[in-house]
Image (tube, rainbow, N blue to C red; front, side):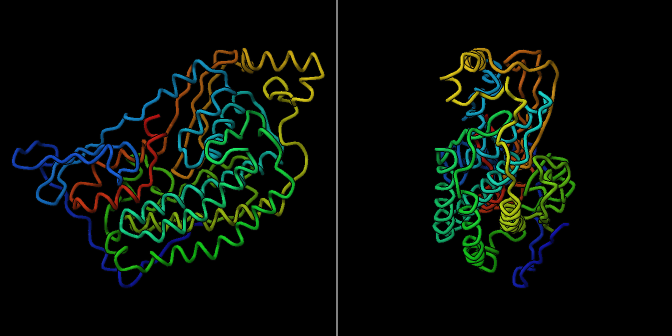
Length: 416
């Protein structure tokens, strides 16, 4: 089911996208060259935009990336499958729990391994909490970009509550490294799902209060309505995914279209925009947080018992520490997992999950053994930024700040 949004009447004027320069690709010496970033606060990381401007109007915009490149994909070829889990935390570092999950499912698909229902439910709950956390960060930063400080303070107060839940579950607040191939690192503490449910109950009214600060705000609508409009055709052509794609009217959500980890059990709507501008992208993320709460409450209500890791993953999943210290067989197994890695069959696999920023994909090629022969990451932020040379042309310089905030990217996964 797709949910469409209606614009506020005051903002219905919906300024048409400013026309692009006919000579956008040609160098015109009378125009000014302006470099925005890589240390500009509105670029949300080490992104540099090399722009050509005619007065206040952008006639050409070229994103320059790579300042945060760490070679994650090459590192993966020199690490065992389990050792690479912490590196996935550093992709979209605002949603590490979702990154862990996507990578683990990809490797499990390669190993032809199914995880139990309890593990799937834990993964769904943590992924949706991570989605809320990521969107709150994006919303708070977007608010600051257009001058709304109060939104930032509200959103970070709620994120702090989420970090306490993450710390209780994983032992870490930020880079959690919680998911394991074949399960999760530990079962949920007693009462943790109840505390997650309680967070959702108190979060919904606060979310409505946060959104009310912006949705009908005259300054906010003036800076977002009709700004950075991306058509449905362009969104598809440039490979956009996630909220940026859905805001342009494409109801694609991998949790619905290709369900994984038991998402087919839960009822939720896919919010879809109508105009594809910065305001639509804000509305879609606001509604996604409501739908995440809806999913979490269903998962908690039907939270299954049983194991939190696959029993048939004994050659992949590390044995419990108590058994390592008391059984020679378990000690040898742990030693082999650490030194040589889990032995995977030869083959290749691709899996992508619906992350907060869009479709995060892992393509893994295995020649057998404990180390991948090749690993390629399909980073949603990288693909989403590809639209900048088109969407920024014709915009005012101040509009570029609003466009970047509405795209909600993370350079950690863009540069990898």
